[in-house]
Amino acid sequence: MGIAGLARRLDPYASRYTPEELGGCHAIVDGPSLAYHAYELAHAVSSNQSRLPSYADINAQAIRWLKALEDVDIKVSAILFDGALPDTKRNERLSRLQSNNQRVRQFRINYPTAACPIPTQLGSAPFSLLAPGLREALGDSKYASVTRIVPGEADDSCASCANQYPRSIIFSNDTDLILYDYPAEGRVLFLRDVELWPEPKFKGYSPTKIQQALHLTSLVPWAYCITQDPREPFSASVKAARDVDTASSQYEEFSKRYTIPSVAPLENSRMESALQNLDVRVSEFVYQALDVALVPKVYLPLLVEDPNQASAWNVGHGLRLLACSLLAPDREVLHEYKRKAQGIAMHEVKLHSPKELSLSAEALSRDISAWLRWTGDRQVPREFIWPLIAVNIVLPEMTTSPKMTLVIRVVNGDFDNTWDFVHLTARMHAALYSLRFLKQCVTLWLAVNEDSSVELHRPVDNLHRTLQGMPAIAELFIVPGQAGRPLGDSTILQTLINEIYTSANVEILDEQISNKKLKKQKREAERKAKKKQQEASTQRTQNLSELLNQRQ
Image 1 (cartoon, one colour):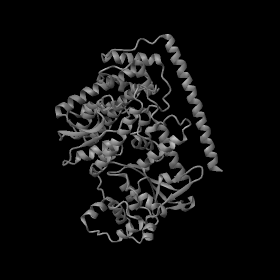
Image 2: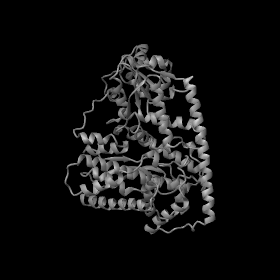
Image 3: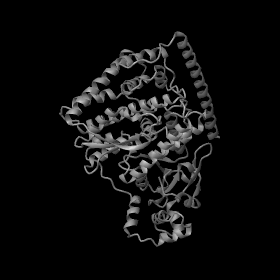
């Protein structure tokens, strides 16, 4: 996001700040920007640059960054996340989805055989849950009390929040934030221009001083002129800004974007509290469902998958249908955006009738309860419970069953550099995210209907109880190419997955794994575990070295 060319024109007006100059300021942090910045940090410090960081690695870097701010006496006062993007950003969002989808397509074209390398060249595209993953991690950290989801975009609320403090700093990578009105000592620092270790270095902007230098009362007219003629020389665009007709309808439409909106609190306090625990795609759907003039839209996250196969988002459709039908009982349809063939397309989804909704909730509640009882009876390790439940969801929806050895690898996160692994992982992610989507919608429905005696309350309450044990994103979503979880016992996993195949009436394509092969797999697991311990030891040494350097 941002106005093309604005950052380049602003650069001559940047200031360098010392930690002493910024000490005592209040930091207002753009949560989504921090999530993407933390990805860059995690990738940079990885002991193995040929692998991808995990969600846990990324979250750890974000929290480390926040702590480093406080170490130089900059108080973290707010970390804000999007609650919903305005409908005016629809084309921009679809363009971004199409662009990332095209990158995955090109990646597949570059590697047309069965082999697939670790997708490092896709950048952050494999991490489509960066922002909700970080928000979730912050909720379990010392920053929980200052982390919140806002009704609209985080950047609007960053500007509003910054105006509550005479000495505030907004940390973001969105150049548009320069254009809002701030107190005289308000500053905007782009995350890419901040170094916190080994020596803190800050580069940023004072919107008030820039206005004074350009002899403007606001930077919005200047930004408007840049959008009208991006090639216009700097001095000419500044002169044009002084002569802008601010009463014109075209300018008024543009400037609305940089007017801080006032948002009325929701009347239902339980609902407002529940909204703080929603992913942006869920909260966005909720706000649209409340607006009877809109057909609700759901923009599903990009999945790194094999574009030559059917969309992985075909998995979990029933879960998402139930979730959306719960929160939009008066609607007949919604629009779901996901990959179809080689592009991103809108799919019109017919929502459940009240009778269908009740039957679907009861059936799913029974299924998940049965799966959880099964994992309990088999004493399945905690880290494998929900991945195995996802296998239960994925297998019946596949026309050709995958080999059991592949399923075991995917459950373990043990990437074998094949497109089959990538696409099955995408299907697993679709199932897990659909369960997460449902969990959040069920929690919100109960918050709104806590005192309801409707027939639907019992199966929804049962669903709520069964879904409460779902782990966080950082624990559930393993990206192909990251360091996997400690490998589970192949014999036990084979037995468990064998039972899932049998219960789903799915043909087992693999031959039984011989004892010789099992011993070989066990040795390989031990080798990888030892290598991971060595990498962790190296990383700890690096972290200790950095810490000692910071204290010198």
